[in-house]
Amino acid sequence: MKNLSLPEIDYLAELIGELIEYWGFKHIHGRIWLHLNLSQRPLDAQDLMDRLNVSKALISISMKDLIEYDVVKQAALSQTGTRTYVTNSNINEVIERILRSREKVMLGKIRSAFNNLKQLPSLELDKFEIQPSKLRDLDKLVSKGEKLYKTLASII
Image (tube, rainbow, N blue to C red; front, side, top):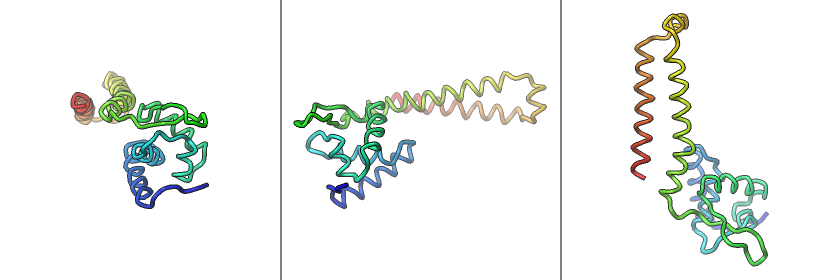
């Protein structure tokens, strides 16, 4: 495999990969995003393989993820007939889609599971030594998470 990238770009790509990984994505997603975002032209899988020194399989599965979240968009075919890619330039749209498809869904599952627990008879909760005040505190915490999500989503 070739490495057709500058050390400065590689280092920045690593750091962005770490940040993206912190937010629940894969390290490679951030690296791919940076190269696509900085490029003067749409890149194909081979370009990314050469720049990142990774396998075609890793690029393929990563591109599928990035396209699913609309972080990356398919562009025109290259002169050799390969699919090329660009980043979605509307970062607000990207963040909103990710929040809707991940955080909102997760908060909904948490709320549902919490409501199921809260609806258990008091005797059942006592049997498992569930402290009512802690249950109320957890309800407040879940509500704050939902409110934070709504606030964040309204800003974008």
